[in-house]
Image 1 (cartoon, helix red, strand yellow):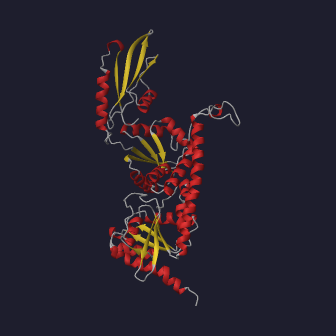
Image 2 (tube, one colour; image 1 turned 180 degrees about the horizontal axis):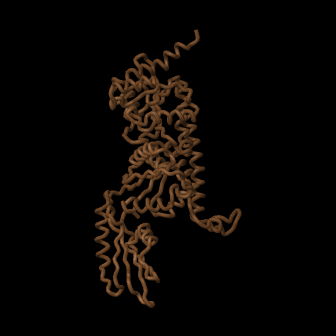
Image 3 (cartoon, rainbow, N blue to C red; image 1 turned 120 degrees about the horizontal axis):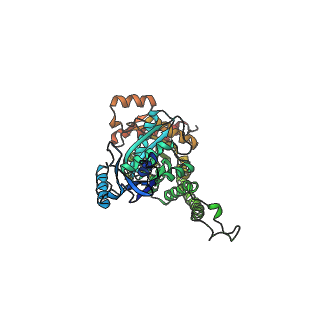
Length: 462
């Protein structure tokens, strides 16, 4: 559904009282994407009038067209008519339907103020682009009360789904995290794929994780998220026998899926323990050499990997997308004074990170516990940078790392005027840099040296 404008099915039913197609008929036509809907009226048990309703291309003033004719005199080359109609519908669509990427409509439903919803929608759009989705529309619905079943009203949801199919969407992405029951209710109403923000982030993580550690953690988070959302009917009646030995043949596909997911989760948890042990051994070796660790943290897409590359003359993967880096990268940084440190680049933080992801990436973020110093990098050119600072500080508090020494650094100062940069840096007692201009990094390097060694010297016992 979504690739082709129509389903390839005709639907004919009778109205015994000679009524025209009603609202319910039209809703079925639009929601189920029938090629045509025919209403046949009778006169003394014999067919009399046939009313044929069909959809019109997206953007037309009227959404449907009605053709009425005496049943016996109807002349319509149906195949030619539908082929021409579908060709016209394809031309009316605003996107290239031959592009294999998913076509998404982004939806935000909340009681929050409109400006908050707009800010969050911008971030959802960035996430969608990072997941390589084509965004064909964005819908913000501010409601007085959240509908517990559909998130928004059933009528509004039906209109939204119809619009999505008219435009050629293949995917609905909700900014709010959907409960298992909401996902079931919405997917029961449409054949379009339905995902929420958490699933979108998980998908991005799955694409971007490269190390074994990262892949295991992402898969674990996906399976934990998926398990309560598996749907099916009649599971209570599916067992041929109970107790040991009574399983197997009597299991439905749903139960088999659940069992396999639980087994896979158990296997991944054991593998993660082994990987964590190996990581602890690497940490121990670093501590033995007494090399200080500096970790770059910050909101996703703040420029952390670019800064790591600039400081260490390395070539960690960089891309102007959210979550371009998922796996922790570590590099050595040497100074002329025969001092050196290890600098690490961590996964980007984001507001309302799904609980399963926080748990899955806790092992990655545990690297921060060994850090002697944190560089909190902020994209000064992003209008939401204050909210980003708060989101990062909140996660640091959750990880009990708020007491770590931190240098607040504003990146991308080349995108602002020098006056604005100076004002913001002064207000936050921060250092302004452009990771693309190495000259601007000198004050940061001096501050790192000061924090790591001069303060240590000052506090050393006499």
